[in-house]
Image (tube, rainbow, N blue to C red):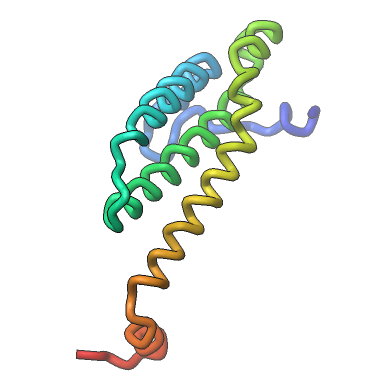
Length: 131
């Protein structure tokens, strides 16, 4: 752990915004999870809804993973007992988030390969233009 504390992490993002603190990352994670899980109920079962829902869930869970990594990096900003109390549920959710990213990426790939013409994909990859 001494190695991680010696690293000099940037204080601004690549877009120039200030990086969130540990507490702000925690609150953002919980808000994203609450809103995201409630919005999942609105996606239907048609092809376009499954693709949109899978994309939404990949972005949602990727954002949650990034926020959890950020709150771990900035953990010294709050006391250890508060840090563990606030983030215990997020630490439990972390492997679930990785599993959901994998599951929904697999669903997107399935729809990409099932509902596209493989001949057009192969011709495109070979550099042949099909009209």
